[in-house]
Structures are given as structure tokens and as C-alpha cells.
Image (cartoon, rainbow, N blue to C red; front, side, top):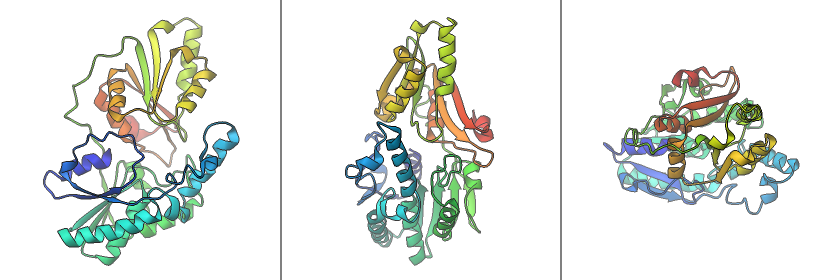
Length: 339
């Protein structure tokens, strides 16, 4: 979403050429106006392409051992050098994108390239381009923390940081969605700029009527330190004590972590109030946010890792409904100031 809005803005006064993965895994809608830029597709063979063959390692259903296997494999894939082969995009994507980009640059006289994390693959492609075309300006963007000490998402974090430093050393500028993310970047003499997400002004005020029942919704992922258990515990107590009328409330979840949601729902005996929709189209998720009485925001932070301002935050702001933020760990001062 961040890249799409940046693309749309840049295309208003510039010619924009985009290299995107050929095989898509996102459920974001295909209704975006693709006429604003010329889009080239690059071959991507990564861990998701091989997921059917390696289902045993990626299995998140069933016993605890299966979840642990998925976790260590996920960490391995997000860590160099494994990431070069099987990370998002994969080695084939890096090579194909590089030669495709060089062709586009020569044909259209490109003078600036932009790459965004996630994934590392795009930054690697940009670094390769910059190594052969010193005249081109390269802006490297980060919307997430590549190395997260709170969720322990990579092996050998010092080595991963060094790899990231090598990749970014040719960048002219580094942009980040928050001060927290920028503070973790291994920069040398590059220009560092804050480039926050924003609210789509075209959709503000187009809110549908709220649900008939008092609705608390969460639309998103339930990985890492994200947990809705503190809210469920409080609801369980209030319902048990009769302080709220259960017939007038509902809990809605939309996302690809239905099993994790239902596990927490069952833990607090809230099945009769839960509506688990699973993975749905992005437009439908936006509608749920706009019709809910409270939108739940789940995140995590520590004293060293703050400013996890995902695009979800701005979707919630756009919805114009109250936001309940549950933060695992320390108070996120940057998020607190925004909300």
C-alpha cells in the first residue's frame, strides 16, 4: 500500500517505471489504476513458491512442534545468506530484475531509482544497479524493521546488520516511515529522511453506517508479539460479572491467522461473540474498519525498538473510528503521539 501511494503521487508529474514480482501472493485488490506507470514483471521463485513442497516445515496448524519448525525456518529465510536464495523474491528475482532494470534505464534515460523494504531483494537489485551506474540517484526506503530484537526475527543479528550496511552503502538517501525505524539504520554518510504514510483524502468521510451490534474489530496479522488476549481477558470478566450485555456485542476478525484468533477466543470462552472471516479482500477489510465501533491495533515495542507505524495505523485513522492500541512491551512514544 505504501509503495502504491508513492507510485501514484510520483506519477502525477513524472514518468514512473515499476518492476514487480510476476507471481503475487498478496490479497490486495487488483482494482488499482495501473495506467499511472509502466509495470514490468520479474520472475520470482522464493520460499512461497516452494511452500507446497516444504509444507512440513511451514506448517502452522496442529501441534506446537509444527509451529516451532515454522518459526525457525522463517528466521532462517529472513537471514543472510539463506535470504539471497529463498527470501521474498529469491535469487532468480534479483538477477532477472537487475537485467530488466538496466534495460529500462538505458531505454528511458532513468535518473533515479527507488527501492523499498520489505523485501531485501529490491535493495540488493538497487545496489547492483548503483555499482554500475554511479550517475543514478538511489533512495532506499524502509516501512518495517529489517532486524527486530523484540521478536528475534533473524539469526546472527550483528552479521545481518553488517550485510544490510554493505547493501546500503551505495544509497544516496535512506527514507523511513518513522523516527524509530530510521534510528536503527546502519547509515554512514547517506542523507536520512522521514517519509511517513498518510491518509487517503479521497476516501475520508465516505463512512458507511456502523454495525447494529457494538463491534470490536481487528483486521490484520497475529504473528510476533501481537496478541489480543488482554482485551479478551477484560471482556471475559465484564461478561461474567454481568457488567455488559453479551447480546449487544460482537468481535470481528479478518486476516490469515484465523486459527490463532480462534485459539484466543476459545481460551476466554468468547466463541458466541466471535465472527471470524479469515482472509478477505482489502476493500472489504476497509469497510469493516469503517463500520466498527472500535478498531484494535496490535503491535510491540521496546526501549530500543519504537515507531512501528504500519499502514494499518493510517487505515484506522482514515476510518474515523476509535482506536484501541495494545502494545506488548514498552510504551511506543511515537505511536502514542500519533494517536
